[in-house]
Image 1 (tube, rainbow, N blue to C red):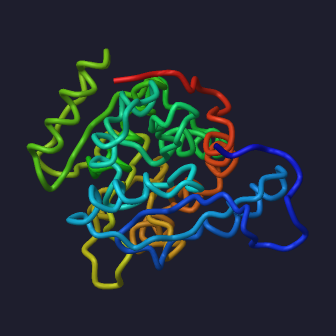
Image 2: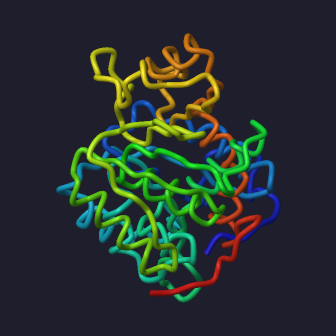
Length: 283
């Protein structure tokens, strides 16, 4: 396992480098490798985060192969693997169990892989920075995939009244049922992404990454009193956020999720702990 301390050499990279992989499909848009590697090195770790383009069909085989690399200590998981990866690791933290998804995996000293989810944790940090407290507020969340599951779990933990929509109604229903089993009943599954009466509107789908993507929410239904938030990081201001700004809404950029989780990500990968949350847990 990775040991903190001074770099083994003034050269970087070198033969004692500890590896962390970032698995996604695609990965060209990811921004975490450079700042995460810089934070690891500032913490005294001889380590680097490397992007790895892995298709869903290959995920299980690639993970099995990566487990055989002796100097690979952990993984960052991005779209579309967060749900699938939760079934491949050996143990889940409390946050990951509630979300049913992981965006981090760490190989512990006994060789077991432990999954964590800090997307929702980081999203909630962004809300706090915007002066928004979810407790007692009605929120519309569009998207019940890996990122959506993480945001949903954190919003209900924070006391929000959650409305959930996904293009796949069964997937939205499965997430609502999962949250209910975790102690958070009352999530309402919608037939359409209607933000009426909501103080918070969140797009947790990939819609907005491409110029010709349809909008996840009808901008005509947005109200200036709403905070509209994204998980899409590229472009920084998506078409939805642009429309929300035009209607006088406050906005939260998708990149806030990455920047607000960098310290938590590096902390978990290096030491197994996340500030503000327990690292313990299992299936």
